Amino acid sequence: MKTKSRPLPSLHSDEAAEEFVANADLSRYDLSGFKPMRFEIEAKAAALNMRLPASLLAALKAKAKAKGIPYTRYVRMLLETDVARSR
Image 1 (tube, rainbow, N blue to C red):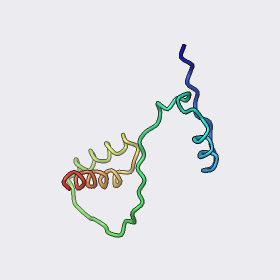
Image 2: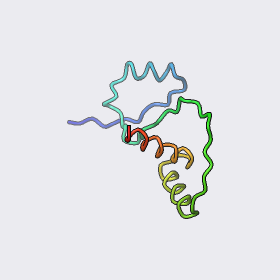
Image 3: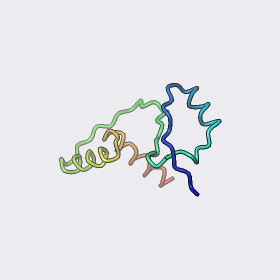
Image 4: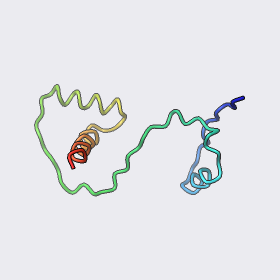
């Protein structure tokens, strides 16, 4: 018999989160709402200015909004993915 998944508790500090993960059986919790997250560590010291057709910019903004991220970050992710693929 399968037990019901529980929602994750609210954790209000890094220490509380670390302790929870170290001691909890995560298979008993509902993780279906989780989304992958990227951390941006490298400093952004250079800028790029480009002109695009309005329709392309609107499409980029719509896709970024659907992913829940700013459109500039979405464009940067596309560039990073393409550069990494060609290495």
